[in-house]
Image 1 (cartoon, rainbow, N blue to C red):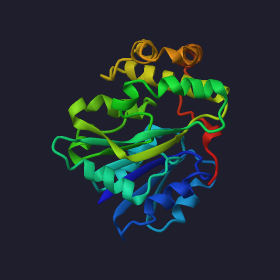
Image 2: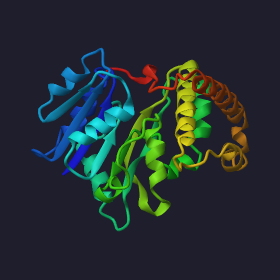
Image 3: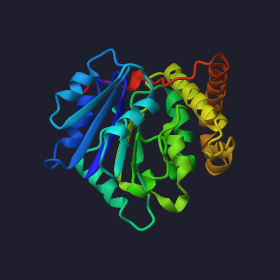
Image 4: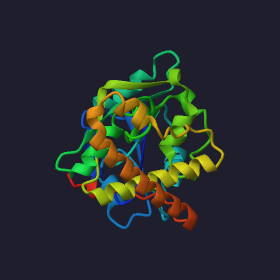
Amino acid sequence: MVSVVIAAHNEAAVLPRCLAALLRDARPDEFEVIVAANGCTDGTAAVARAVPGVRVVELAEAGKAKALNAGDAEAVRLPRLYLDADIVLDTAAVRTLAAALDAPGVLVAVPRRDLDTTGRPWPVRAYYRIHSRLPALHNGLYGRGAIAVSAAGRARFAEFPTATADDLFLDSLFGPDERVQVESVGAVVATPLRTADLVRRLGRVRAGNAAMRASGSTVRRADRWSWLRDVVVRRPALIPHAVCYVALTATAALLGRRARRDGTVRWDRDDSSRTPA
């Protein structure tokens, strides 16, 4: 018995395949699925309502934290799975994530992250050649679009903070021995189609993470040199990719600082990777 909370802002193009995979082999009433449609100007809410058993909460204003909190308020079951609308996990995958929470001491479970870089330009592929090897992307909870939390884990917090980095917030709540990456379950994460799209996404992430840290939350500290120490030193052949990685992250850092200075940090996203089913 799992509650699945999906915060969805203008996700009519991708939500159908997310829900179809999730519920395809589900037993009657096995999953409680709640779609929190927020600030939508497309048919996201209608798409969700058309799927039997899916409940919809509509918010006039866009905001992922508010949407997650609204979905949480509607949900009654535990464990809880927070799922992005563009991530496809089938019924068996959700069962496996939920089962992983039955292990002693495990409070949170995530799938492995499978990056889709097909057809992307070299700078995007170069960036992810480095980024995908960072230790934080293997032992952290972010970057997958799916986080399963047990009842005891959900009791760790009252609600999601208004800062945009919801996955970084969850990452801050659990120690290394309380989390598990389920290797048999993969979440395919589509990377941006263009270099400019990647830079905008990174700028948003940097701004959101900085806002979370500035709020006083005890979150994982950014390791600015991990790309060199943990990746390039061990694999010198990646030096050309690292040069691109550093250039893109530096540009994104400037964008993030500008967004914080101008007060324009918001739940933005990369629409280039959201292709219809």
